[in-house]
Length: 315
Image (tube, rainbow, N blue to C red; front, top):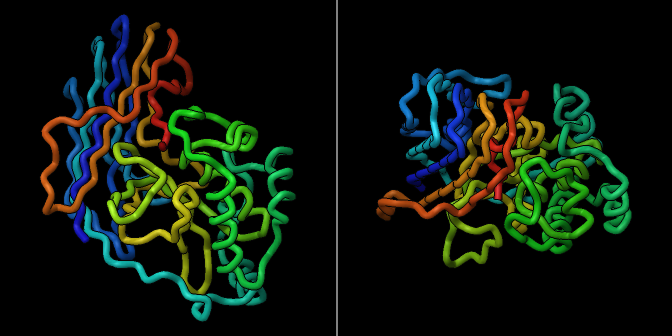
């Protein structure tokens, strides 16, 4: 399947700020069954854009705007081809003994250790006890069961948590967004000594499939290492094994490694972040204008090491 993607991000400041510096992770990855055929990034006000890759192979676009600005608009466009992904079968996956041998022989420690948002807490341990978390008959069955358990245990409620919310917020109220569900699953899977990582990207919605996550926003899911199949993707938000509808943009230990935008500015202002995402097959026309699916307002802040108003929660 070939997809057309438009991702528009707007920042509005009152009063105007100056010297904005930002990095953007919006270019889909090219690997495995996925190829990014075309990518274009436009920034207004105009800025010179530098491109590089981080230690996990994610493409990062970096720019700075030295002058005064009341608004910044970032528009990313991409054409991506994703080949069908066969669903993993029990006969193809290994047993626990072979699994442990493969993990011990590989370099997976970064995806086994706790990370900033995917870490153990008392609320997580309580949830693990509710699930009677343990290794099941096979690694694949364990992951499928956990994927379904998280789907059933939590309600999907947009804007019920914040971009930097710890997993306890979703665990205590039993609702959240895909970013929260991915972090909870990663933390639980790692407790079972299974390498697991965070995936940032897009989901192309199909009217025939009742996805909980809405259109108009970025998406997040997880990948667990499952020899001999390699990294296998699970979407706890929608109780899915990821398919060719899932378009991968960036991988990381958790969200902290892969925010679509991150930056700082100089000045003191209230800010508003708006995000609109449109994903469709190439035979469907893109709309001329996208209504923002996410709007976040913040109080007045001054420049800081990391300014959260420049980060987008994955809804």
